[in-house]
Image (cartoon, rainbow, N blue to C red; front, top):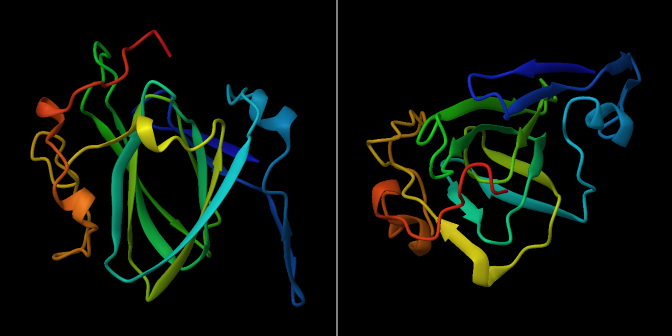
Amino acid sequence: MNVIKTELPEVLIVEPKLFGDQRGFFLETYQSPRYVEHGITRPFVQDNMSRSVYGVLRGLHLQNPLTQGKLVSVLRGKVLDVAVDVRVGSPNFGRHVAVELSEDNRRQLWVPRGFAHGFVVLSETADFFYKCDDFYSPKDELSIRWNDPAIGIKWGVDKPQLSAKDADAPLLADASNLPTYGQI
């Protein structure tokens, strides 16, 4: 597999090795020792999948104090996937990485603990897959406004479809209970 470092050192793009011919393809989506070599060390305990239609934007979400790291990928379709450093005291606080994930490029994005995560669907539909290193905890869930001008994400969709929770999420500057850099 090929691992690409991003502008945010903890966020990684993973390109699994694809073996294909006229019959189709095979790829290994996860093998613990290979990911541990690149700093993804916690065991994954929960897998999730969502299906969304064009223009659906999910995020920006995180949990605290029960934080989660997520290895995400797209099984079908195409999305713009985003990770935002929201760790108070981080030298990269408020900065983001945006990466296209699709069924064609088969890329994965490692979203570490302490980062908010979101994506917008750029294809007719998309099946989105998450491997999480801790369990979903509704009481620990936080949201950050998807279009916070201080973060400046260019989503590529003019009028995304949002949940009520995402539409009403606070700006990063107004968010409370954010994780602290160096304590996760």
